[in-house]
Length: 601
Image (cartoon, rainbow, N blue to C red):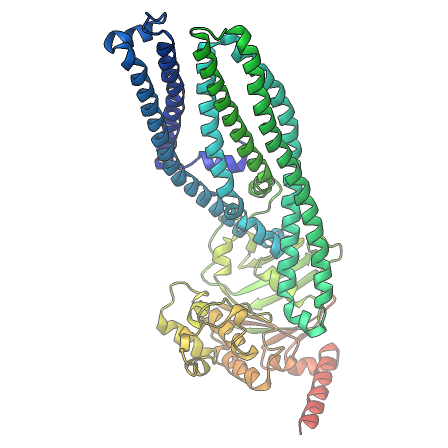
C-alpha cells in the first residue's frame, strides 16, 4: 500500500482531513451498531409478545417486563427499534456529509499531484506523450474519482453494517449463521475470480479510452487541414474504427459487471429460502421459535442485501479500477525523467556562451541531429544561424535553452557547465519567439503578461510598443482586453507574431531568441520586426534563426548549418564573398523575390 502512489496521496492528507476521517469512521460504526440494535429490539418485542404474559426466559426481557406491563413491553421494544433505526439514518446522513468533504479534498490532492507531475517532467520525456494522452490523464481524477469515492463510501458502510448484522445473527443462532456464512464464503471465492476479470476488462477499457481521446484531440487540432484537403470521410473512418474497438471493450466490461450484480440477486433469494427451510428444523415454530426464525430471516435478508450492495459498489469500483491503475502508473516516479532541481546561479558578468564539440541524438533516434559542433555566442552580439530546413538550426536552440542536454560535448559560460547552473535561473535569461506561435484563448494583456506574471500595465504597453504591436492593439475595440480566440485565430499572422515578441520582451531578457520568427510574415510586418531588432541591437544578445536571409543582414556573425555541422561562418558580406552555401541561398531568395515583384506588378 505504501508503494501505491494513489493511496500514498490519499493517506498523507492534512491534519484536518485526518480528523474528518476519524469522525467518518465513528459515524459509520455508530450506524452499524444501531443497525444491530434495531433487530435486537425487534427480537425482544416479538419474544415478549410470544410469551403471552408468562415470565420470559431471557434476562433482558425480564427486566423490561419488570418495568412495563406485558401489553406495553413489546410496544416499548418496537419504539426503541424505531428510535435506533432513526439514529442509524441520521448517523448515515452525517457520514455522507463528512465523506463529501473528505472525497473533494482527496480529488483535489490527486488532481494537483497529476498536474504537478505533467509540468515537472523534462521536455524530452513529456514530448513522448501525445497531447490527447496527457489531456486524458489530467482529466482522470474528475472523470472517475467522484464515482469511485462515492462507492467506497457505500461499500464501507455496507461492510460495517454486514458485520453488525452477522454478530447479531451469531447471538441468536450459531448453526444458521455458520450455514449462511459457509454458503457466502463459497460464493465469495467465485466473485473474487470474476472481480479480477472485471479489473482486467476495466484496464483495457481505460487504455482504449486514452487512445480514443488522443485520436480525437489530434483530429480536431488538424481540422483546418481536414477542410483544406476535404478528408473528413477519412478522419471519420479512422475514428469510427477507434469507436468500435472502444465499444467492444465497454461491452465486455458491462457484461462481466452485470453478471456479478445480477447473480448476487439470485443468490440472495436462494440463500433466504435455504435458511427458511433449514431454520424450520433447527427452531420449531411453537412458542419462541417463530420470533427467532422470523427475526433471523429478516436480519439475514438485510445482511444479504447489504452484501449485494457491497458487491455492486465493488463492481463499480472495479469498472473504474483501470483508471486508478493508469493514474498509479503515471504517478510512480520509476522510469520517469524530471526537470533538474537546484544548481548554482549564472555568473553576473557573462562574456559568452560556448558550444564545445557538442552532439545530440534525439530520444528514439539513431542519427545525430548535430555532431561535434563548436561555436561561441558573445553577450551583446547579434548572432544568426542560417541553413535549409532540417539542417539542425532549431536543435542548437533546444540545446541552448536546455530543452535537451548534449549527448556528448559541453555548453559553458565563463568556464561553468550550463548543466551546473540552476535550470529556472538559466531559462530566465531568455526571451523566445518561435515560428509556430502559441497564444491562449484570453485577452492580449493576459497573453503578454504570460511572459512575466508580475508585469504592470505600463510595462506591457512599453513591451508592445517595442515589438511594434501597440498601434494595432489600441485600434481594436477593446484594446488590450480583446480576447483573441484559441491560438490567436482572431488575429493575423503578423499580429500574433508581434504579441509573441512583446511577450518575450516583457521579461527584459538578456538573450532574445527568434526561431524562424519572420519566415511566414508579409513584407510590412517583417520590416516592423526588423526595426524592433535594430532598436535592441547592442543592448541585448540577439540570436536569430532564419530561413529568410534578409533577417540576418545586420547580424554581427552568422553561422551556416548543414547536416548538423557548421560549414561556413562570418558576417553577411564575408559570406557572400565566399560564394558558398550562404551565397547560393541568398542568390536563390533574391531571385525569387525579384520574380515575385514582377508578378505583383
